[in-house]
Image (cartoon, rainbow, N blue to C red):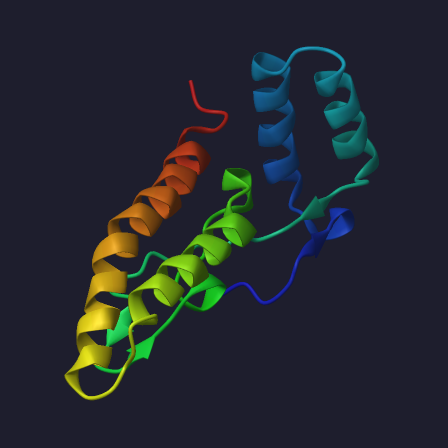
Length: 135
């Protein structure tokens, strides 16, 4: 379990060597020179990225939206926008009221509109992360 970011001095040399090798093979100038300098001087951070893929967004009369419901990798640049989309769709779904069984139906509708979309978004970030820097 990762509980914090790593400072450059705390990153194992073997990891830095692998990063240098991959950067040299994959990145064009000026990025490779800047990256190699940061690695050589250990002027970098190792920041853990956590993603969360939801199985559902709703349970009975409770719905989750935004980061409480799904967490994409930062590379997707979609967290804030997706949270707004969740809120808009949830608002539309409950606009006619939530008395009695209407709440359960409204939330089921919300989940049907959003779940596959947010799962694809989280998966796209995971796929990019897994492929990044690989041959």
